[in-house]
Length: 431
Image 1 (cartoon, rainbow, N blue to C red):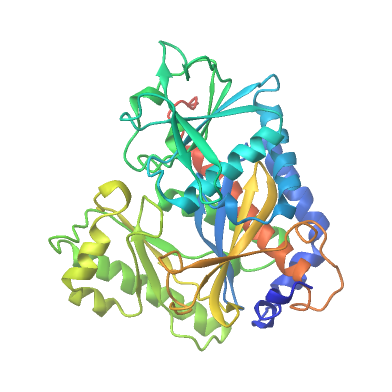
Image 2 (cartoon, rainbow, N blue to C red):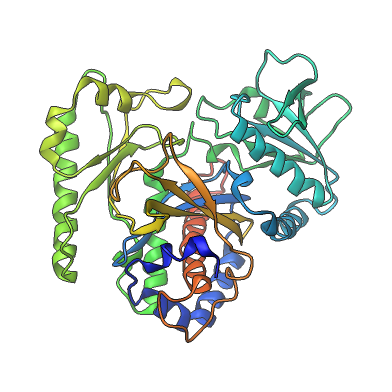
């Protein structure tokens, strides 16, 4: 047992863990059959919330940063999964072009890029970094906190391909979520694999599409286990044409939030849950924990102060918010050193490769933890991800808890696969 997990294992646990463990062979077979029909995203991270009475994903990232927060012990898993993913896409791959975010002065993010370079180099690829920042006109070295360097190079576009000087990659891996829009330089590439595809970027992607797909996946999975899908599915609704800056259409937001809170109250009553329900209002596109607020009473939305409206009106890269998703709030009862925590699970291809607890000492159980002041405690996933201890008492075993997290995260990854298929602009349409 890893000492820092003891507190986290004391939280309330429902029979979900037992049901998932008893059904493990059926679950793994079900996933295998799903992956025969659907292609997993190249890499994914999923924020999971454990309320004791409910365990659900609340966010799914298709351009995960944070690989630096995984333990060294996780590296073999990540390298193996990267090998499997590359082999499937481009078996003869030799060169990988990695395109990171533009904000390359963030030392934590740079450590994530360094870890990705390490994973794909050890998977047998030549890895170089190309930047979408047009002010970079030649190789540019960035020194990391540990004294090592990363070299960013300007992209070179020919009519059909994208690369760097003297570097022609088979595969281009985006670690840039395209919040600012779709760069022309990435469009109409031929005979090169762009991973993830352009329509996975926030310029196109919508959280409401993802959670619609997740609802479908959750229903199928719940049917397999003979359980209520609500136990693993956060209800949601979408509200468009909002202008937080001017305070326009707030009434519509209020009415949507009120209706969703009423639905949650009915579920709480059905299960005898004494908690006060809440919803999370967040931008329908975007990441980095921006444009998010907790609403405990729809009336509060009528009295948003200027500071809150400004916070909600703009997200990463200065993009204005006009569409929001209102999501059932899932409280987290996980604790690490008596601070509120939530697990984040990382996957490459269809494999769980690690994860960490996002921990925040100044946030409550019903608030967004992805905010300044958060810290990260690695999860010891190596053994537990696929080696749960069947027959152990629920809540008593770290491997069992992590296996359960991994199952929920893989459901969210499968939903992302459904979502990307449904929103693919190049998909063949059959009448």
